Image 1 (cartoon, helix red, strand yellow):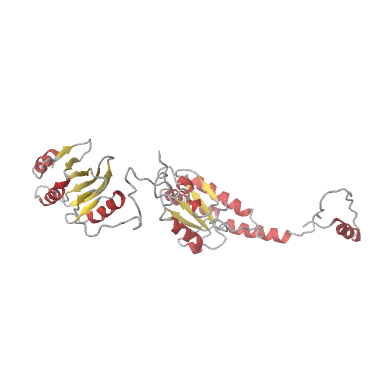
Image 2: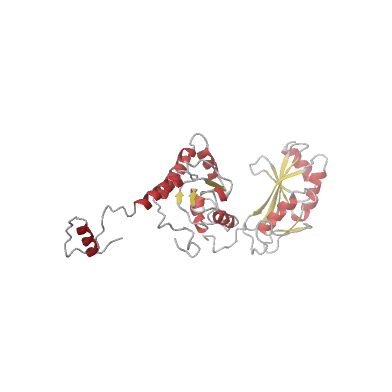
Length: 199
Length: 153
């Protein structure tokens, strides 16, 4: 986005502007305020605003964290205030998957398939100790996957056993903040390279 | 019926039955494995006992022995007992199946075979239930080793 110093100077002179740039100035001079990115960033802001405020969650409640997740949707805490209005039973219609519970070896392929069925852009919240690391109870066993991030890439981790509804809300709002920093130009798909070990 | 009365009746059903209370509300009976089928069928058919409902069947690894615990209930008299049976043979543990006494035992025994490797005589089709057919070992035994997934202390 930098321009060559000489050309920029000529251009400024032609427009009747005088800008003094020292001869020994290192690097390129970037003209300010020419509006180069204003369309893209504004569009980004609009899209991110829309995405972050209408996240439709897919419930993946495999154990007790699911009870707290239900409570988060219930009137007392009510996550529809923040745009998590419609809980979807189908991965095709969801933007966000909330993993609330232990993932066992048999459930791993199911979780991965659900994630693959979701349409881009898609986000993942790992709720509770089991979804983060295998959990405090069944860690040392033959059947438990030691964290959902062994199967799919996770955006937000919410610690707790189980986390209270306030914690889940906090995590979901953090995810909204994360979405608001995205831009179209540098969007990366988190699943790209995930199976090859890229973090 | 009180536990003492139950004990008096059941004591007649077999030899070398061992009764314990173990600070639980149920009467515990440890049955020698050779007599398991005989005692169980009488527990169901005896007109004073009528244990017609096996509400829980559990596999157990006591360390030295493997075994099965049967929780029995009578829907007629509303009394319960616990029957335990043990086998010292960890290499090839074999017990009698009770699936033709209480049909629910068929699936419980599949599960116990799956996780503890206890084989049951006369079981119609003993196979892996929850684990994959090619699974090696029996993961709920105390001496099960899985270096990939478990931390051995």
